[in-house]
Length: 279
Length: 162
Ligand SMILES: Cc1cc2nc3c(=O)[nH]c(=O)nc-3n(C[C@H](O)[C@H](O)[C@H](O)COP(=O)(O)OP(=O)(O)OC[C@H]3O[C@@H](n4cnc5c(N)ncnc54)[C@H](O)[C@@H]3O)c2cc1C
Ligand code: FES
Ligand code: FES
View 1 (cartoon, chains in turn blue, brown):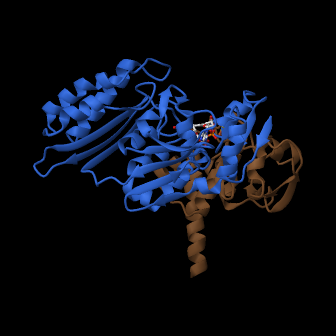
View 2: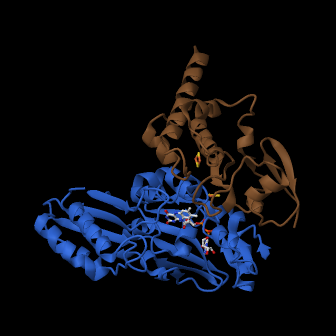
View 3: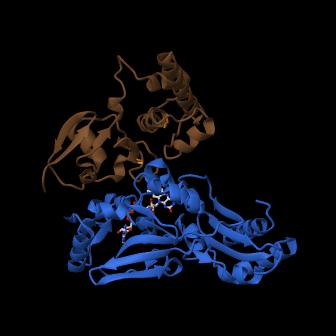
């Protein structure tokens, strides 16, 4: 194994351009499991630990920028994140146990692209953007477009996740984060939901954003549901209609953790009770 | 590769070897600190928990080069058989250990929790210890041990203020 240890982002991007086959290493909570199993023995490793600047979290009035190397613990501690992005804070508090949260990074969570990434439903409803950097330059990708499938992203050779930008949302009327698993911590979810709802003065729905995780190869915003409920009253009738539309936007599977049928039913119930305020 | 140095339980230790060796292996095999245990080797069980700059981490998931220049604390820093730390006493009196494999990791996570002023609320303790698995005790006695250590520390702090 060859280890590259850049001290700055510019150096990291240059080294990565020279050896695009290198494996980036952040907190190592996914990487080291593969390494310990001998899966990375002959590879070049690009260790990002020296990129202090990429660990920072910065907040302006309109945007919160989370460096790719910020850990799940860093995110939970940050005042502006706690105030404006509480669903992300709750999700980070459920990633593994404390030990994993102290090491695992947001960039690593995204790059790993598991269908069950805990931070994804919150980032999807917060309309986050992912900033990608390479020696050729930088580009921004809407959160929903960063994944190409199970364990696949749209990152090109030589490209790293530099930061996640989240627009500061208007204060929602209500918000939901729920991870349904065998056990709250240290367990991969059967399904996850994040929701933001804004009601207009007259009590009708001004905007709904709802995302599900573990219900498709990648995180999904429920576009059909979001469009259907706009301008309507959040009553039982609407909740039933919305629940019936969920299947259009997701593709749950049977696996060792659960069945497609169970996952769909739980997601529908989470959506319905969120709309009618029964959660 | 340059030599690495780490501050381990207050002593400066030097390491000369492959940078990607797991921290747990360097602790146990190079430095004889065998208090730290390996359960799963995959980050799931927390038996290998040590404190890195005061925070609980899984030493089976850390390449030793990531600990270079930093402070590492293992269960050996807590107390000795002749002079146990209050937390260790609590595990003894409350029955918080059976086979003992999970205990060093439990102690390290709990130690960080007690040091940062965690509460004796059983729910809060369970959340904090979620990354430490135990196959023997059923957890209740472990939670009781930590709660008892928290209360003891509170009493001794109050006594000092008086
Ligand atoms: C016991 C255990 C429990 C876990 N529980 C959960 C859970 O509940 N929920 C959850 O979502 N995840 C969980 N995980 C997975 C993992 O901890 C998280 O995905 C974590 O955020 C990964 O971050 P990292 O910094 O450790 O990534 P690393 O392991 O360092 O890297 C992960 C992958 O991303 C790539 N990468 C890292 N950073 C970048 C970057 N900036 N740009 C491009 N590529 C990059 C690496 O090459 C590697 O392929 C768990 C893992 C373990 C071991
Ligand atoms: S041995 Fe490290 S977490 Fe199990
Ligand atoms: S005492 Fe045996 S695993 Fe906890």
